[in-house]
Length: 277
Image (cartoon, rainbow, N blue to C red; front, top):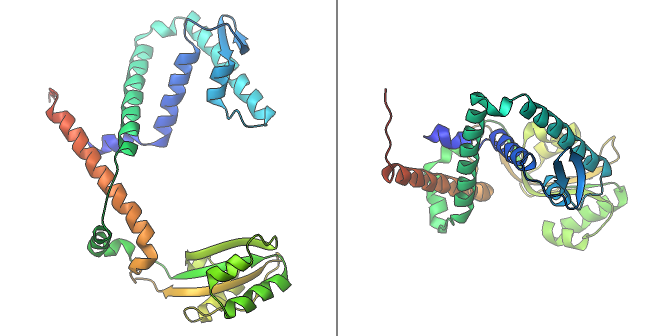
């Protein structure tokens, strides 16, 4: 049963089913002949239908042309398939029937899952963490860091000087909107191998918790300052505070999965099911 659930949630399946639905809608016998952007014999692509296929706010005319061209190609092939009797073949009808069931099932689950509100108390999250600590055991060395990159050395030096006498968030507030800032990462957990350039990693390894690095320059012309908030060696379990957000996401996902299983179990109970060997 769970394989069935996972199967429904595969993105490729969903994409194929949506494609099938669009194909059926666009290839129907009755077509509105009002405002249309393309036509293949008696089949019309209306402005409304085109809007469902593309982002109407997009100014990319090439993308719009590609969508229309793909629609025309699909219509040509569909109409030729119809002319050759493929729509009357049992294999075609079987595929359409199965696709319709898959699509309806997916849409039902897509309505069910977001509609379910998962309420929990802080203690629920703590309990989940305590029972599943091994899930948060590191298989690599990691560092919890604050990192900021500048493209101007003087501004990087000013930021570091202010940070030495203040804290990270207050310093960021002072530099809010500064165009020399390339990127900022606050309380980010990074694998050791994901810390680069190598010069930054060497500096971070030598820092104590809450110690601030020097301004580190690299060949790309960036000037980086890092603040170490925590160091975690391979095999250690991450502290609750570090992974609290991740724990909440996992807890909600587990509860949604349980509710979905219960929902399907109820369907089993309320319907006649027979499976023959």
